[in-house]
Length: 219
Ligand SMILES: O=C(CO)[C@H](O)[C@H](O)COP(=O)(O)O
Ligand SMILES: [Fe+2]
Image (cartoon, rainbow, N blue to C red; front, top):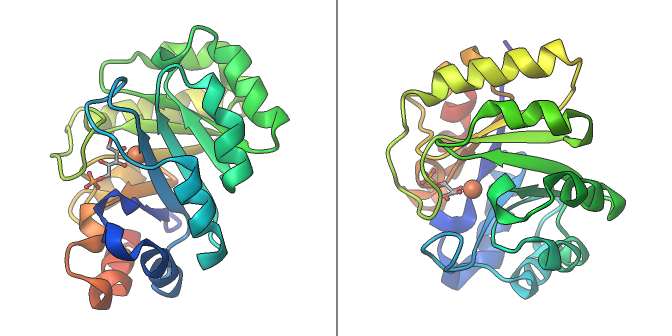
């Protein structure tokens, strides 16, 4: 089993020092920077606009993995791509035409991700699998960091892994919400390639980031 990609969610970082925080993640061994975009409508929280992503871009060479919790989502794709997003992930519930949205993300030159909420069936993947570079399984209901991992997510990870393998898809399988050093290995054993973690990376301050990331990787 190879070590998973670790994608710290800057939702849990010190917003007063965001530039330094993303630079510190790179030095600490993070693989991607996960950016949670919330609109106060699709989810009950309001976070990071494209201008903030643009301002952060010069502070690290790590890929920006942008999780869009915004409805309607289509009008925002280009702005986040132009701001420096490498991955754009969307919820099927955030627009009327998921197939078109994923195609548009690829047209913009980004990797296209689809996000499955705890209440969203994995079956939708079958309809768009050829357009998907990443599947993000939410292991909490979206909107806030610091929530508890929903145990049934492990079975869902395994079911998505099976579907991706059966289709010959090379899409990254990412898990997001309540991921800690205690459940990271279970997520990887179930088939995850990439783990998002906010609280588990940032909670001890910058001097702990490298150890926190190593623990999530299983070292
Ligand atoms: O998408 C998200 C919430 O909607 C966040 O990425 C997620 O909650 C990460 O935070 P934590 O690791 O603290 O759960
Ligand atoms: Fe997220």
